[in-house]
Image (tube, rainbow, N blue to C red; front, side):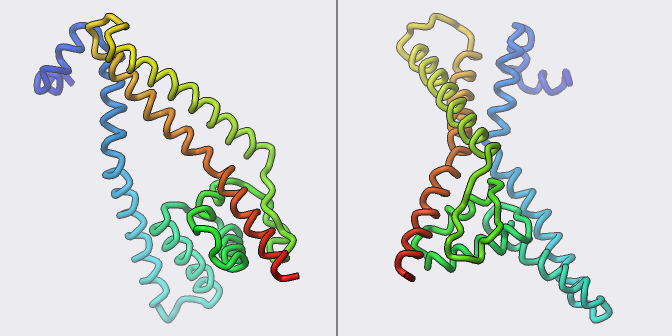
Length: 213
């Protein structure tokens, strides 16, 4: 461990000055800016799984029932690789049924966002079906939205104070903290998007039902 700090004099200085918060925030910030590489690694793992499934399906000795199961899993894996979301088979079927019903009047990304929730899929095959969120979904969305606004506001206020010199400090930890809070607040607000997506989809379903009357 000491070799790492000796190799990076900046980190070594933070360590000797007791700036443990700065080191932690720097590590978290590094993970955030390298998130694409992490996602790329996950995608490589998924591609390896796809290769294995395709190899299994090409085996003529594979039983029919197992081939049917692997075909469904293959569709799920391709969907996950393309859209970055892994769905259950019922949700996978439901979003395609709903997307076909609204005749592409809603961007498909709203179905992807909605699929992260846990709505009841009972009756999805009938025209009167509407997406109904659970109490847990409402709580999660509300919690993320409120906490995201608070954290983002605090981080932005801290950053502005540092930039205009109102906050007198020679520690870099407060600057890193403000940037980290802004990023974290933005990510939490992003997780509240399903509420809008459900609204758009249900509006499109209403219009589709009126048109088909």
